[in-house]
Length: 117
Image 1 (cartoon, rainbow, N blue to C red):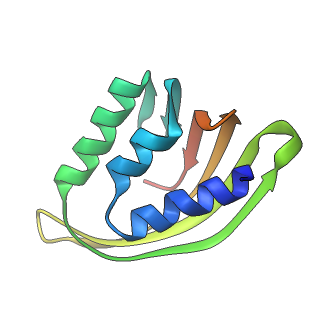
Image 2 (cartoon, one colour):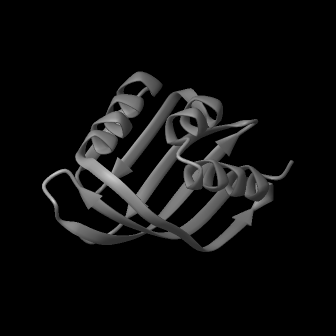
């Protein structure tokens, strides 16, 4: 399975409400996640960050994968997505982001997200 296909599977799982299952399957123990709000290191800290995000979400309305591309030789996948969610406070938002993943073997070792906000 290519890195691009693995990322496609991750987003298929997310579309089925399996964010944490995808995280557990595809992220390395030493993963580092970076986004405009900070950096988290290690699978436990990164997973806790994902759980925190899920706790803010009341309802997922849509997940759209706009594009996925890869540099298979270097283990890099880039994805552009949009999530339409309603948060616990009642605010609804369409969140667009670009992510860049670095893969080693079957796992993501680094992922950086780019978005406004």
